[in-house]
Structures are given as structure tokens and as C-alpha cells.
Length: 138
Image (cartoon, helix red, strand yellow):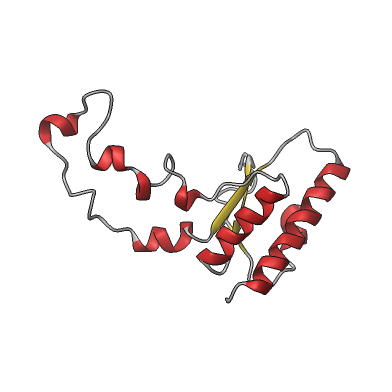
């Protein structure tokens, strides 16, 4: 229902399902045209009380902010402490991953939503996406 409705918005993309029949559908993923639009959508939805994830700036889910790993500052010893790292994580770049993750916004899917709640969520997300994509250069 969510994708059917939001897919009408030009320029908005979605995660490719690896297995439509077996996907757990715990998150819904939106791919905005730009990083600026994605961050603006994340903030817009948060202001409306809709929790979203902007993985690009999430220190637990993307290497960009893994300073504790890059600097080997863990509360425990790792193999890398003994043998060193195979590459310098401080200078390692991931431009293709950055290009995708910087445009990705996700939100949880609840199996307990009523049709009314789901319709309300879709309406809010649809309005926010249209607002953000209209105000941010594509």
C-alpha cells in the first residue's frame, strides 16, 4: 500500500526487494534524488512525530562515523589490535555506498497498524516527500 501510493511521486525511488515473497518488511526505504532532500525529509517527518532513520549519519550502521573502529578504541581487544588492520580505515572511501546511503530514509513498518493509521502515515509521508522534493533542488 505504501509503495503503491508513493510511487506516483516522480523522482522518488525505492529499495529493490531481493525476494518480494520472503522480505520481512520491517522497514520501508525511500530513495530521494539528493542527500539534501533525504536529510530534509528525515527532519520533516521527525518534526511530525514519525520516526525515521537516516543511515548515512547513523554512527552504528555505517562506517562513516565508526571512529571507535577506525581508531581501535574498543572496550575489548580485537584481532586488529594484535595483527593490525589490512587497510587504513581512516582514509578508506566508499563513494558508491555514500551516494546511495546519503539519499536513503527509512521508517519502521508495524504489523499492528490499522488501515486508518496506515492511511494517516502514508498521507503524512506523501505530503512531506512532495514538500521536500519541491523545495530542494534536484
